[in-house]
Amino acid sequence: MTVQRSMSARQNWENAAPRNYSFVFERHCYCAGPNRVRVRVRGGKVAEVQSLPDGQRFTDPDTLRSYPTVEELLSLIDRAVARKPDNLTITYDRYLGYPSRIYIDYSYRVADDEIDYRLSDLRME
View 1 (cartoon, rainbow, N blue to C red):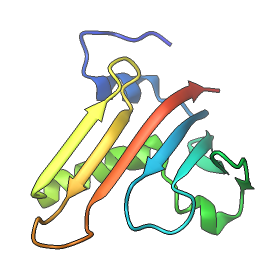
View 2 (view 1 turned 60 degrees about the horizontal axis):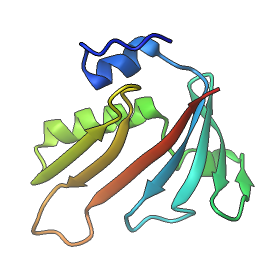
View 3 (view 1 turned 90 degrees about the vertical axis):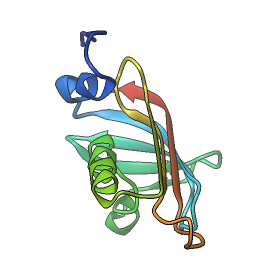
View 4 (view 1 turned 180 degrees about the vertical axis):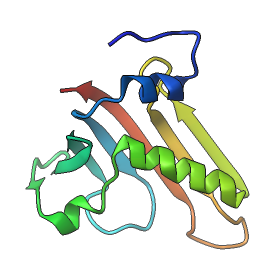
């Protein structure tokens, strides 16, 4: 994979178009399930989720649907921008182009509607 520094981070991700990768995903929200996991993506779909640090692995479809691919997170960002939230903070990995942090607060007046996702340790596999 060649990364072009003159492009935007997101363009780097979209140009690389990886189909198999994994990343550590943390969600800081009022969500069910493990909130710090390694997500494994195969063929562009979540294939496995591993809870960190206990190592429990999940492959059942209901659990897998609860965790996004990078592409799904990029779509989430697009939808959030269209909704014009009160606060939207996105940080992208400079070279690979995936969103390393997504913070969305749709309304300051609504309690507990915030979403805070963090991605790290992305590995092409």
